[in-house]
Length: 139
View 1 (cartoon, rainbow, N blue to C red):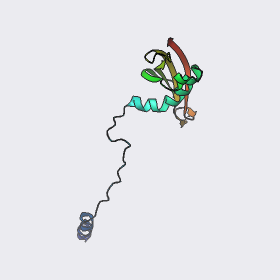
View 2 (view 1 turned 60 degrees about the vertical axis):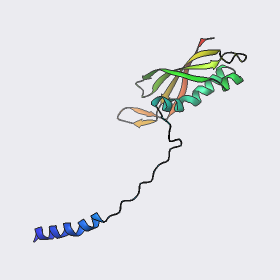
View 3 (view 1 turned 90 degrees about the vertical axis):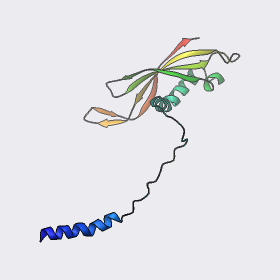
View 4 (view 1 turned 120 degrees about the vertical axis):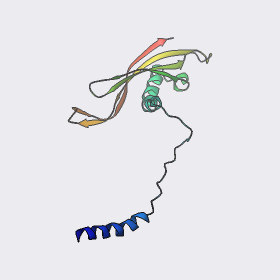
């Protein structure tokens, strides 16, 4: 009797499962479909505002510092035992307003502390990005 009931239930529900209509998934439309994004792009998006403020401060808020400086490359990333990352970056700042092809190279060290609240890893701090070191390499 149990076997007969089980078979009857399987056949009865199978018809509903076969005729079920799947819902169309909602597609997320990316901003630009042809863009290729790397991990370095993500890091730059996170640290750019902190570096921009520091470059303007280092060069006295001059027009050349607020417009025209550019990223060169990420030199080093170090993981700290306090669950933060120190990222060293080379940037280029226009050296002379008269010659747009002369640049000063600067090394910026940024500490990124992702938000963390975990007793398992003894971590409790909010998200923070700060410039911890700024060196003028070539002027």
